[in-house]
Length: 166
Image (cartoon, rainbow, N blue to C red; front, side, top):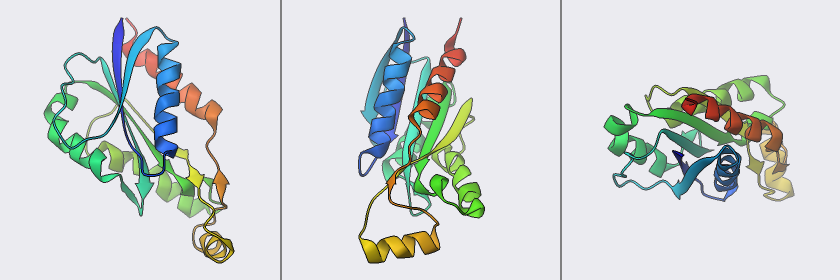
């Protein structure tokens, strides 16, 4: 049975929910999948055929623990098949430039790794109240709400099975 590790960095839980969904999709593919919150410490990756790294984007940067996880485990990660996803509210923006900028965040999560797959998903944009929501619409072009496309997330997760097919 193939083993996969899904590592995530999440502040409000949206990225964690996506990581759990990725796990569910991959387990249906007859794989053993472990999910863990990113920690800066070295992790034993030796038993995994695929490492999936996911992070929410906060102020244009990945979760701090994701960068630390990649840096501390870089040598071993370079020897593994890896896939990366970022979660960014700006993917739901009506502003094309904001969406284009958000698409680059997967590279920030990868932090120089040569990944086999990278993507960015729209996230959940909190309701900050009327005044802040007006500013968010004006600055980022986003509306409060859950903008995650679960079918897109599941299809991407299932596509990862190709990376470890015999």
